[in-house]
Image 1: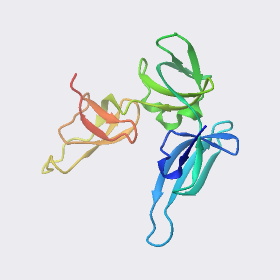
Image 2 (image 1 turned 180 degrees about the vertical axis):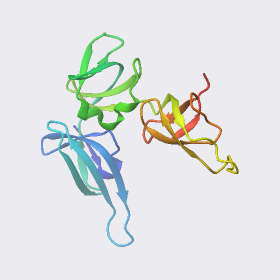
Image 3 (image 1 turned 135 degrees about the vertical axis):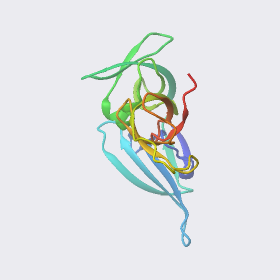
Image 4 (image 1 turned 120 degrees about the horizontal axis):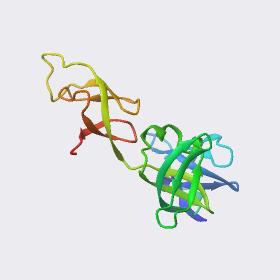
Length: 189
């Protein structure tokens, strides 16, 4: 265990609070106009998935658990969970669906992800920041829209809705952010 000050807590960190492990979902440093600065941390208990919200003074010490960041390749999903393989040892692990959460729509077969492992148990996952997907349907271009400021709704091949520039049509491959599903650019492939 490593003690860190609360203002250094980041999304994906694993904390030891009262002997239980929690993975950080969000961490916001709040600086009110009056009073001491605080860090608002939303986290999920690893053992049972319960979500907890805590507030720490930014100078308060918290215990960060030691986790290894290991590269794993996504294989497939079944009722057991999501199956990943270590490309070096070919060891396979099953990650429960609640650990991946709503990021599951961006998982693609063969994708390399970073699994955070504590004592041999996966506790959190980091997907690549961007993925390439195909536009399955989009609204037609509205005459008079300027390309610089307007966006139109589109449906991606994984079922997620996003906003794209007017020149993007159905069948176009685009790059989107896995964090929020926002359009980045047209795919270069």
